[in-house]
Image (cartoon, rainbow, N blue to C red; front, side):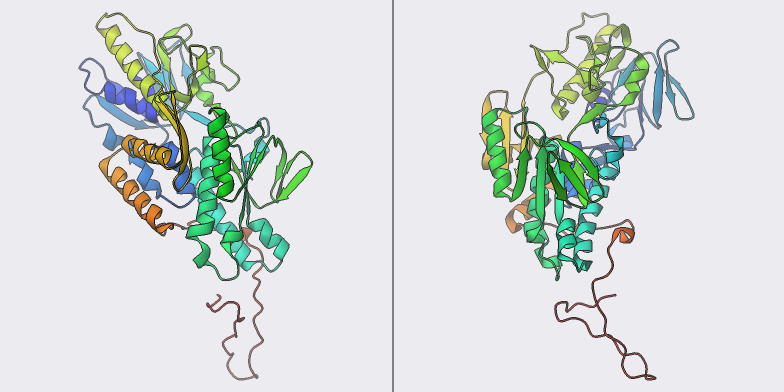
Length: 444
């Protein structure tokens, strides 16, 4: 049994098969860690550390029948039943593809460089550094117009990722950062959320969508719906007849299935997902299972959402199907049990749908969202760390000091807006330069 991808679906399948006597499991992933993607935005906004939402795959999967390989899967040869990876091949009897989704820029791949998305830890750290570097650049800037440009942040896409990112970023600029700078007031930062559809959180009921918009506006987020982006460059975003000057654009608008599934040569939907059978197998390939964000599953005329609970249920179903096949027992079609979905907007702000019936908003929804996410985290240490950090942040309205820039961002910085006075009378030793009264701290 070869499982490609150790996300929610792949990890559940491997765990469920971990004690099977007659199954040997090989988990293949390009990273050595499992990532809790729903909280990536909190790493990007310096609320959590990367280690708080990740866990080493080898630590999680320690069953004797399970092997973990660090490899980059390239294609699947279904005729020879081998998974082609960088530098070799891995044979399989049954294959599970749980490789997740990547960013979709709607036929504008050039936007990826100036508008990073949020799918991996590298993405989150990159966004965090881009946001923090923007404030550092604004602190150095002498031109008020360009200073406002550095302090304007545009997020494209008002799905759960965009909404959560916009709320967290606005909250950070108004509560966690004002004391950090002397020349700028981070509370004057502008966060703009653009959505091409008529409302935010379009998959939620309309009343929850409207509540989310009101909560975002209360957090000082400038929400623009019906705003279809037509151009993005290093200094602006254009939609309709309007252009917003900004040096920081973040992408949360679209996703596309991992390109690995294209090598199966089976029907795909518009997002590149495999239109799987009721047993979650690829059409015509009974030994290849496709789950998670790369699987297009419909139930009662509605698509199964691409969220963590759905992927986890798919992973467990695949493991059960394989056990039944080995025991010559009847096979059952996959049935998705909708436990609900939530989107957090800020401290104490959230909206959600519980068991597809009960609509929640405000502080109760935020409490349910927090409890569910802590329960789904891998490992006691991660749960305890996130819970304590959230408690501290909630009551102090601030946060721990995780606003770190680890990369070299000085190349993107403007010229230093500090005029140092000339040295004292020559030829005496150079005097220490006098600093402007508006900046008491030393400047190097």
